Length: 315
Image (cartoon, rainbow, N blue to C red; front, side, top):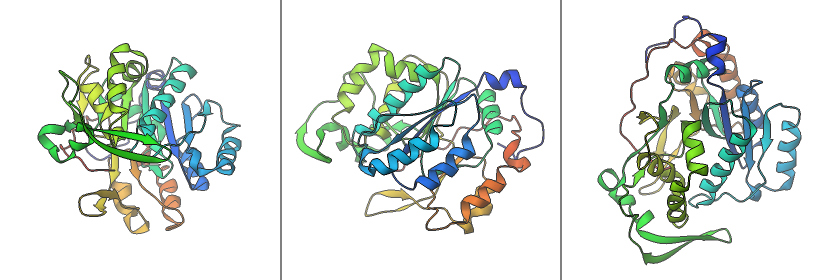
């Protein structure tokens, strides 16, 4: 996609067709979350927030009080959402279901964490999604062919219980007639897909299987999407700027962006970046808040975005 030009946004009528529903996972840094929320909030869009139960009731109450004046914003009942566990998928499915019940108008679902931040305005993002209407933005590769080193996540039974992931060592076959896929947990997908994965009985067997897998949030949605009726073209792209760095022998983690990254972040064609730590670098979010008012962040040039490279990194 080329640099943004002041070509002007799509018409207001068309933009309304691409109303966005956001689901945001929060587990710390409430003040940073509030800055993210203000940056993405537009009346007429919809927002559901899940605060990890392990974060404690004071943080939950703080977020609830903050959201109370905002139209179209709601909180999910707090449950523990544990890294590596199916509870993260469960939280997202509950978030999708809540958003579906809040309005029949929104067309795209975007998930974020409380440490993400937008690189483009909401007008830009709506125009972008309208220009790519019907495309699914989620990273996915064939797990057997491209990431065979991760097959142990689904080839054995895992149990999430009492705040732990139990590796039982019990082998099991994969789902008959299904190809496993893997990617990252971040996505911008259609309402049609959200309704299918939440409510269609054909998605139930995927839920039953992945409930006992490891790091299901990086594979469940991809596998459902690519082994189900067509939901339009799937772009191997999650629309996020992420700088992956080593964390142990084989794992990667997203590096915290800071002030030295400001120029790269402003020049990026991605819609969001992750992640940020406002306690580590208190200036970077202010620079991005200023950037959101710039022409480069406000006006989408309406040129198609190329399909992202086939890659996978563990979150």
